[in-house]
Length: 225
Image 1 (cartoon, rainbow, N blue to C red):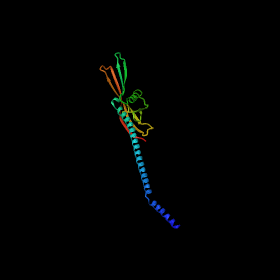
Image 2: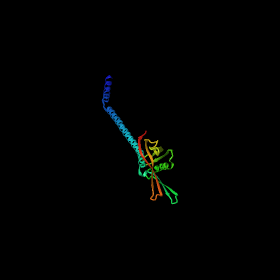
Image 3: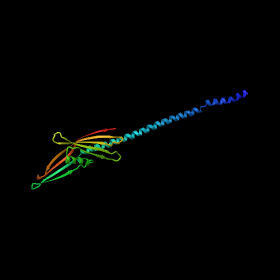
């Protein structure tokens, strides 16, 4: 009985040894490990590519916001100081033969891109001309860009000769409080009202031209978060 039992156990032991010495399980485990490493590397690459794309898009949007605000500020600065950006009030006085006079007023308005802004301020300077402060907000809209708001403040000051008036303009340009990339620029200028007098050949006509001119422009650029 014992001999038969021993003979039956020998094949079973050999089978167990073969299984223990088999490399199939190790190969499968190695394959799984390599697959896991590949998945992790792919995840890292995809994450880095996604992050780079987001950063690039954010950088582009920030550049567009800056371009919109700076373009509006530079346009106002250049147009206010151009020849087509001058607001003029012309008063013509004619002395008649009987000694009476006839007076006529004519306005020559600015014709540049921001002419409406210049003409509003010019009308306030010439016809209101008080010590109050001019305050108005304008909006610049361009397709594909955020709207830009320009808050204009103009106060009355005294010139260097202490007898003339100067008009101190401060324009604050922003692309909106709710913007993901807020940008802010401040433009300052000084306005003066010059006066030119001319007369006709007979001396019966007198023409007084008052021109509002802007100079000493200073643009401060900066991005606020």
